[in-house]
Image (cartoon, rainbow, N blue to C red; front, side):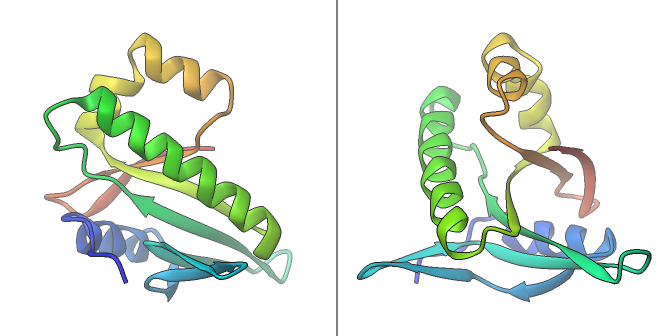
Length: 138
C-alpha cells in the first residue's frame, strides 16, 4: 500500500466536517491483476432522494521543486483513476484534493483554468491548518 500524503489526515477531517462519511481509507480498485489505491472513498447521504453521493479523493501536496511536474504527475494519476473508477464504480466521482494556496497559484492561472474549463479535472481545495474544505469544483 502506498504512503499517505502529508495532508491526508487534514483532508479526511475536512471531509468529515463537510458532512461526508469516510467509507474507505484507502479506496482500493483492482483492474486485471493490478491494484490501484485512491486515498479516500467517501459518501454523503441525501435525505430527499434517499440515496447518496459517492466520491473518491486523491490528495496531492504539490511540494516538489516544480509545480508543473507535480501537476503532470497528479493529472496522469487522476486520468488513470477516473478511468478505473468508470469500470469498477461508475457511480463514484473522483476529485483531486489540493491546498487552497495551490488552487490560487496554479488553477487561477491560465494552465489550471484550461484544465477546469475543459472539464479535465475535478477539484476540492482545503485549508490544512483549519482542516476545512474551501471550495468544490465539479
